[in-house]
Length: 143
Image (tube, rainbow, N blue to C red):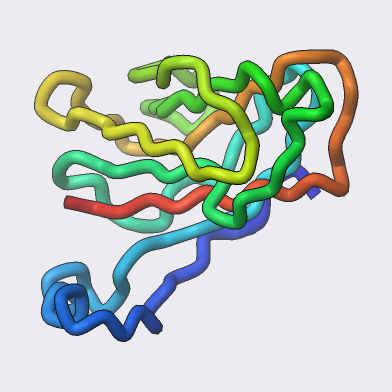
């Protein structure tokens, strides 16, 4: 499995967040699992939700620590877009991040970067090792 389908997360019970459920169409955020594949880019499924503003992208929400493996030390997350779901362009790329016991956050600036009909994320590892058993959770929160 390179990446799972996007899943709606609706069960956050924090009172401060509960009021925003209706604004987001009944869910708080979308998440998926993605496996690192060495230094090759691993892509998610295309977004099954509209991009109508900035996105907060949270990498490694499950706090999987693979920095002891070199692949986890210098990763990047990219936002990609396509007109035809075949040819993809990189719209934005994060700074270097580490897959360790903390989550990393990248904000996609919709006004500066725009959108295309098809969009997805790409996670790029740092070495040639395959980590098929190291599923990393990604979360996307619409603004």
